[in-house]
Amino acid sequence: MSQTQTIDPSDVGNRSAVQSVVNKQETVKMPKGQISTVALEKSYFKGQHKIPVLRGVEVAVNEGEFVSIVGQSGSGKSTLLHLIGLLDTPDVGEILMNGDRIDDLPEKSRDQLRNHVFGFIFQFYHLLPELSLLENVMSPLMIRHSLWSFWKQRRAMREQACEIIAKVGLGHRMKHKPSELSGGEMQRAAIARALITKPTVLLADEPTGNLDSDTGGEIMDLLASLNEHDRLTIVMVTHDDSIARQAHRIVRLKEGRIEAVDRAA
Image (cartoon, rainbow, N blue to C red; front, side, top):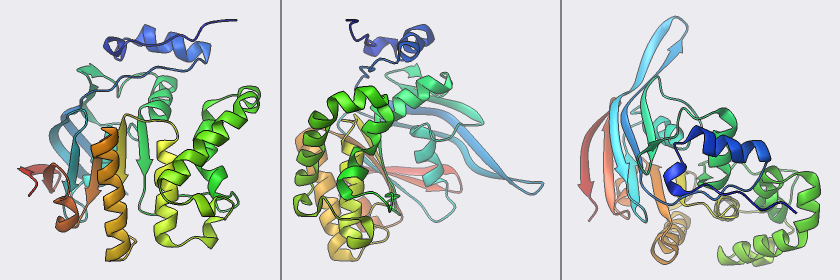
């Protein structure tokens, strides 16, 4: 039986080390550590018109830190989050982890990072309507493993999913479809799905944007608990200053540039 090959944290930027693991379709042992951006620029085209979104953004997030990115609509905050999570690529600049560049790794290597290092939470949940809550939470593991590997490990994976679902307070809703859940419950389900891969960095795009203030407060309490007790690094985008102040630091964007970086109250 072959042994699982892992990547040392110092090898994140080493193409041969990462690609070797990807080619063998083994589980990648990814590092904890700092995420940073260097002179990021990103533009989009509307017809023939080039629209700059990010203009030379540099920011660093330390391990175990909770950082909010705040700005008006169109300031580039969601684009910055997507670039950090390798959901998009910068026109200019670099994304670094522990000082090693990761945004220009081969596509399969970036896929591995997205499935092992980053957990994603979106404003509109993005739960699959035909799947139960339990199946939605398990879906990242289905993507990570081959059909045969998943089948062999399905009981252990189900137990893991049940444990995380209970952790976010939805143990009584595991068999329910998304249409049978409230907005707050759907966001808790999305958080559970993000946690199932045991990420080191959680990226949250307007996690309370579709929720009333009381439910939004419950979601923020859950995120704060994950950061404090599990030492999970969290980068959160929000337009709400009262939500942003619950983080350790606030990065303020204006017209694609960093306007200020503040300690939260």
